[in-house]
Amino acid sequence: MLLEILTPERKLYTGNVYGIQLPGVDGSFEVLDRHAPLIAALGKGKMKVLKDKNQAEHYTIEGGFVEVLNNKATVLVEGATVA
Image (cartoon, rainbow, N blue to C red; front, side, top):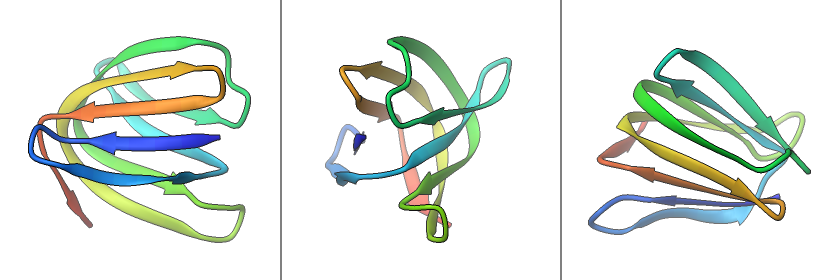
């Protein structure tokens, strides 16, 4: 699936990924390839980008939202740093 991670200042990441693990406001959850449409609020915490089954990148986010539609995930966050 295509993933975009956006902050108010810049586009942090764009690329095809296997999935993402996100810190939701009510607990962590995972979005994998071909996930059903979804909009969810995100809290502060760790976000894990699964580039494939063996490779991942980690980010610390300050909260925001995620939208999943048509095999594309858009993560809008107030702030993020590579962990």
